Amino acid sequence: MPPALRSFAAQLAWLTFAFAPGAPMAADPPAVTESAVAGRRALVLTPQGASGDAALPLLVLLHWSESTPEEIAQLVDWPALPVRILIPQGAHPRPSGWSWFAEGYAEMAAEAARAETLRAVDEIAAWLEAARRELPTAGAPMVAGVSYGGDLAFLLAVLRPTSVGAAFPVAARFLPEWLPAERGCAAACPAVFALHGDADTVVPIAPTREAVDELARRGWPVELRGYPGVGHGFTRAMRDDLGRAVARRLNAAPGR
Image (tube, rainbow, N blue to C red):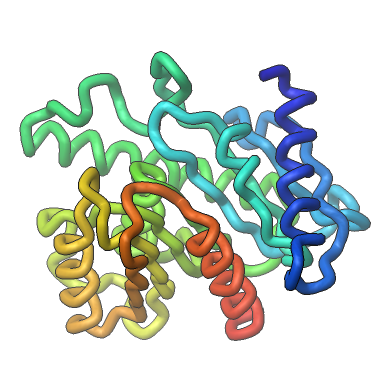
């Protein structure tokens, strides 16, 4: 799909939600622009009426593997959220899109997979810091992601807690070997709100629930919401709940 049509489709998704029966009265859809942000191709969604140099809360949205920023942008339907949404592109090409991890990641042995995982986390954390300096940003960035993008959102909050203010992983893993030896953020750990289908056979919910329980036991502000009968995906109910969670975050911690 040409970029212009993709941008139109993303804005159409906002309009569809905004005027659906029972939906709250919403602002106009955001302005969607393609840009190179901190050296990485991305889509930037800016609320209508906000200038490009306005300092706004930042929500970074990480796509799933074999996807594109345009594909996930079509699912962005959170009208009236006063945030700049940044949707970067993964660095590794795939037949139908891009990934955050090197070719063959899913087949790597445990040690190689761990090294590649940490490399990707460090890469995105460094990029996020540079993007935050480049785009006028109010407070710590929030990060959300789906599937592999959700893994990274989860990992950023737990392993690189100073890089984000909150994380919203969707259909994401958190493996036992990813748990840090100790909590590195004292009392200021970023909140994690995870969303997961309980019928997911690609990334079963049980190990994610176990990780969430362990993080909570360690005092982490973490919550997991399951969706009965939902498989591996990012459903409308999940998107609505994510939008409400971002709004709560904005109201609860405007300064972080």
